[in-house]
Every structure is written in structure tokens, then in C-alpha cells.
Length: 470
Image (tube, rainbow, N blue to C red; front, side, top):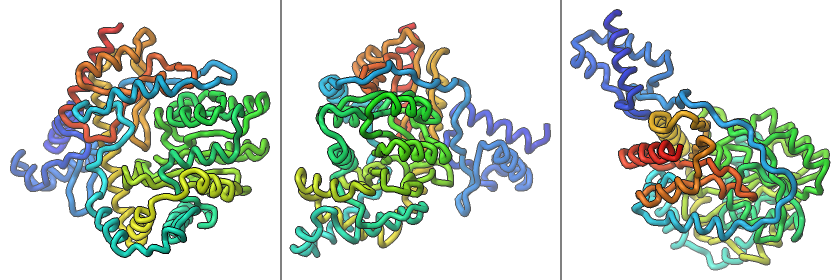
């Protein structure tokens, strides 16, 4: 073995053992020369070999870094098979019971639905918010009533344009977060007793909103990597009076699945044939790890059937509670629902975020955030593969900040949740993501927080709890 191959092999071993973690900087060429007593060309050849294997990456003017790579030791889960038929929802008490147990800030937040605050530019946003409050025109309390601040809606429309979607500011309704947007969309196109289609598994907040509105749901099988089954959806649309589809197409919560661009177009064609509106919860769409963003559904929405719901909560400003709906043909109905329910969204927050978007910096922040999340995903996947027993399956998401784990069938996720909580660790058990409380041996883990020693120790503890249940 030549000198450069030997250096590359030793470095690869350190990466494989987790000594060098995703995102960490390798010694500079000069430092490595001194450490290994070799020439710069030898170190450069070693780093080039590691880069060709996808283990490290060169960043301009910064050096070489361990690349975020998702492991391949454990298989991924298969397509889900939810029990058929419509379901009347009774999930809120059960979900609140689980969520109330993980509010303690001393708990390791693997079960959290939120990213770490340290990943976001709160200081900079605070300066924009202070400026907006100082120069607030009292007239804006009226002019910025629904559909919302004109400057903000224009900035959002420009971001759609950059994604290949022509969305008029007039069809954008600003909301108090994406959750209000989802509620407004459901209210605009359904009545109590109506049936909507959701993915299986699905984000529990959508189930809670549907229950509050007196809706029934039919769960559509989905694949943890490829997303909702279009074959199963087409059968459901033929057999049932579905009034709307509530889906996450980009990095779904909890699975992290991504519906490919061709399948998105196929989905929209299917819904167009049946004239069924799509309510898309797209709060994770900006958090893609690949250079190319996934297709924006509004770019393929030729007749206004898509109500595209998003927010800044997951990608820029957690806690600011500012979202929107690009509502298509339903814009006026949603604007009226907004006026009739919460009346308006915080005016200073709207002005501050409009100023931030106009003055730039958002895309730079997103690039840094995506890189951090990809690195944290790789570290958490490696830890799960190291500590969980044979028979475990896990997803390898290409965006968002969730891992979906399928445990061996005899493991009770609710029991793991209780035992982990007693040890200061939160997890999200699978049954909260199903109207019928399925996924009894599944967990959702959050990699939206830096994966440090506490998180790695928590994953090791979880692995032991799962192994003990076999």
C-alpha cells in the first residue's frame, strides 16, 4: 500500500468508527504533512481518494470536511398497508397525552417535532422585527388584514417564481403558521361528516385538525422513501366520496418520504380527473439535501386545485408563527375563513419577514441549514445502525429532519416511549401517526438538533431498550 493509500485508509477507519463525524473538518494539508511526515502531494492524493469515495468533500476557502453519508447497514421499511375503510377520528386525547410528556427542556429531544433554535438567525430577525415595530404605520393594521401584507406576499410569490411556479400574490393568504393554513383549507372544501384522504402514516396535527372539524379519513398506503401510493389513491377515489387529499409530498412527517417529480405530475393529473383538491402541507420543502429542489406542485397546477401550505417555522423563524396558503381557485374562500376566525396575522412579523426576504440572506441561511441537517442525519443514522438490534429498519431521508424506524414486530413502541422517558429521552411512538393507531412497533426520531454526546448516548440507550424487548 502506498503512503497516500495508507493515510486514506486510516482516515476512512476514523470516519467509519465515528471518531470523525459528518461535517467535521479534516486536518489541513499542512497539518497532515506534519502529522504523517509526508509531502503535500501525498496528502492531496489521499484526500482526493477519500473524496472520490464520497467520504469527504472540499469546500472553497475552508478545507476538507467529512461528508454526510447515510449508512446502508439496516434495510428500509416497506410500503405500509393500513386497514381499509373510513375512520371516525378520536385521536386528540391520545396525542396530547404523548406530547405533554416531552415538554421538559432537560429531556433529550429525539421525539420533538421542532428543530434546534441555534440553527436559525434569531439575532438578525430580531433586528428586522424591532425596525418593523418602530416604523409601524397604524393604517397597516387595516391594510394588512387578509390576505395579508402586500410586500410579504410579493416576496413569497417571487420565491415561487424561482421554483418555476407562476403564483399571483392575490392568491396568497398569510396565516398564523402552517397549522392555521391547513385548518382554513379544510374548512374551505369540506363539511362535517365529509371524507378526506391522508397518507399512512401521517402527521398527527392533520388528524387533530380533521377530528376538530368532524371529518372522517381514509388512510392511503405510502412508501417511506417514495411517498403515497398512487395506485391505492386512485382506487380510493373511485370507491369513496373523497372531498380532499391532505398530503405531504416533500420529506413527509414522520417518514421523510419524497414523491418524485414525475409522480407528482401523475398525482396532479389523477386529482384533476376526479376534480379533488390537494391540500399540500409543504413546510419541509426548503430543507432538501440535494442541490436541486424538488418540483413545486404549484408549477404543475394548471387549474388551481392545489392549496399549497407552507411557513417559515421550519426553515427560518420558529416561534414567529407565520405561514401562508397559495390557494388557487380557493383563495377567496380561504380569505373569508381567515377573516371569520382569527381575523389577522401579526402585522409587525409580516413586515419584518418581508424586509428580511427583500434584503437577502435567506438563501445563504438555507444552504447552511441544509448542510447542517444532512450532517446531523448521517450522524444519527450511523448511531442507530451501530446500536439497534437486527430486525430494525430505518429510512434514509433526503431532506427534512426526521428518521422513521420500524422495530422488530414484537417491540411495543409505546412501552419504549415510556421507558425512554423515564431515562430522560423522548421519542415519538408510531401510533400517534395513524387514525387507527397502527405502527405499534415504529418510532420517529428527530435529527433537527445537533447530534452530540447526549444524543449519541440516548440512541445507545434506546438500542438497549429495543434489544431487551426481543
